[in-house]
Amino acid sequence: MHFPSLGVLLLASLFTVTVQADQTCRSNLEESTPTSRFVFNDNGTVTDKETKITWMRCAMGQKWDGKTCTGNAQSYSWQQARDAVAELNSDTFGEPTKWRLPYVPELASITERKCFEPRVNLTVFPATPSKAFWTGMERKGDTEKAYAIDFGGGSVMPSKKSNAAYIRLMLDGPDGKWWQMKDMSNKKH
Image (tube, rainbow, N blue to C red; front, side, top):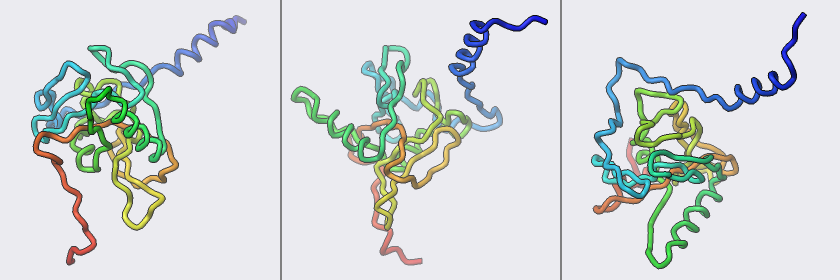
């Protein structure tokens, strides 16, 4: 009886760990984030023509190499994510920047409803993990939770702030915020 060598088994197990599943897209649905909706900037960002938001093409921790996002996205607790944004905004050599965590509707605006695993246009946002991404919105009435969007399946969920999630940062457009958070407590039913 012939058994594979230990080296072959180790190589095969290493290979299966690093293989990533392909994105699945449904052909019967229209694209919600067509590539033509974005202006590709030279600095690793894109500007959404519809919302006027400028997005980092890569998740924090990844680097733009001129063609794609390389390296590994870094996960953060919600407070660590806020601290990372503050550090990035202060480390600009005199040029003020206003990167921030997006609100739920802003981050949801770049989810691709036609595709999942990840639920994003990979031409616009390459190498996006199929994982949860933090938003800047806390859950009202629960100071222990903030909202995240799962870029695997696309669901929005409140998550404990101590949990780890990825972040994709944005800059408001020239006319200010595309979406304004309103106080819903005075809303009549």
